[in-house]
Image (cartoon, rainbow, N blue to C red; front, side, top):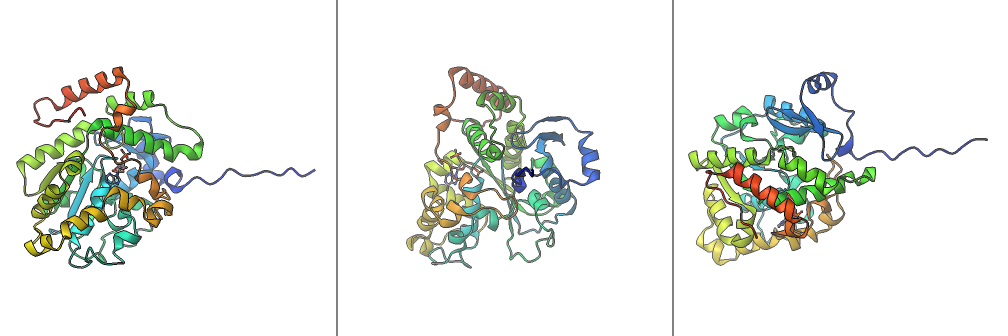
Length: 336
Ligand code: A3P
């Protein structure tokens, strides 16, 4: 008698691990490895932790990406507010081309990850335009790469870098929720204790978290015209001021007329959590490259959610790590 067998569902692209070249697999076997937050393993490459699915894209962009002087690159540790800042940057830089009051503004129909691509995520795509030649200037990109691992041309040109940092306590909670949501395909989630231990030991995607932050922080002090460093919490607290500072750094300050017409307020409203998370594309769409659902990029968007999850011991442990790692840097993370 024939038995009916159902084959297991095909995992989404962000969980597929079999598209690595033999050369890449051989290279990975030489690197230190650790349990990954989403897939099976992450590897220590050039001093930071990166998932096996991403590493081919990292190497490709390091070897091939040619920056232009006018490029703008947004850099973040994962879950620091990348989606938000991509939206703000896109709206800000393209406001002459796409009036923020336009009925069919690109941000109303596309997720910002489709408007501002990650340099290292090209591995998922059909790499036909590795040099992004079809992009209009100034080109906007993003990356999670640490400063010392950026493609060389980014450092050799006048490319501007915008670095967004977030309180590590909230970044950790956001990362834990996000990666567990992506793992749901396996019906298997990671415990907060286990991932907290990895995070504190520096083993998070693109981490150690503190090395990532500190390298860009130092660059922003040494080269303030090249690297603009700011915090998620600062944008939350003083959105108008921070957006205006960003516009000045990018040499596209708001005119008095724009301010009087409400352009600054409208950009902030358009890019607010409430507005973006309620758009059809962000409620029901997913990335064609990674197949991740866009709604996962909008969870709470609040400052201080870590307090709803941390035990007293976790809080003390991370305080200690933060104190040790950021001591003497001048960087402070509020405890609220
Ligand atoms: P939470 O998980 O704490 O809610 P990233 O874009 O780097 O992946 O970061 C995602 C985090 O930014 C999530 O944090 C998400 O809710 C928050 N976020 C997304 N869009 C936002 C917005 N428009 N304003 C504020 N926070 C936003």
